[in-house]
Image (cartoon, rainbow, N blue to C red; front, side, top):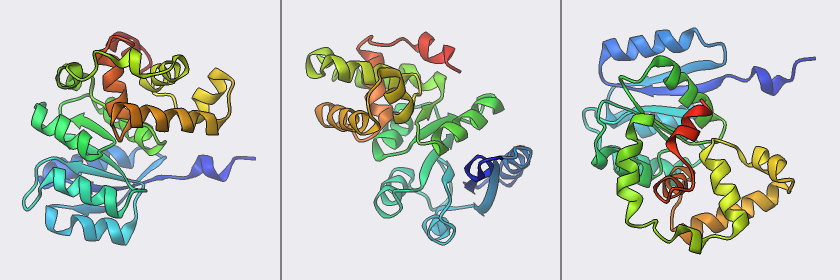
Length: 225
C-alpha cells in the first residue's frame, strides 16, 4: 500500500515580479506530480502576509523585486516562520547576493540560467530538509569562507568531520545516521556542535567551510547529482 507521505506534494509560494518568468516557472512545476504552487507574489509588500496565510513548505523567492529587501525578508522569514524553507532564485551570481542571503538563513540559491533540472532538484532537496546552492556559485562562496576556515580540522572532532563530509554530499540526518551506524539524535548533536564551533546557522555555511578547507571537493559533490 502506498505511504500517504510519499504522495504529499511540496507546497510552494512563488515570488517573482516578471510575469513571463513567473508563468514559465509555474508551467514547469505544474508538470511535476510532487509539486504544487499554492500562491504567487509579484513584489515584496505582500510577501510575508502571503507566507503567513498559506504556510507553504517552500518559498521560491526572486532575489530582486519591487519593494523588496531580500536579506531583510529572509531574516524575517527565519524569525517568524522558521518551518518555511527559503529557496532563492536569482539572476545575480555576486557575493553580496549569494553570501548575504545564505548567511541570512536562505536554504538554497539557484541561478535563473541554471538548467531546469537543477531547479527541480534544488526544490526537492530543500523541501526534504537539505540545503542546495548552484554549482556556479561555489567559487564565490569558497572565497568568502576561505580566510575563516584554515583551522577547520583543528576545530572539529574526527566524527564531526565525518558528519560534515556527508552533509556536503547532501545527506540528511537519518541518512548520515545509517551510514555511520549511530542514532539520529547523535547526528543532531554532532550537527549542533558543528554549527556552534564554526559559528554558522545553516548546513550550507558549514559545507562551505568544508569545501574551502579542502575536506571535500566540488567534483565529489557534483557527482552526487
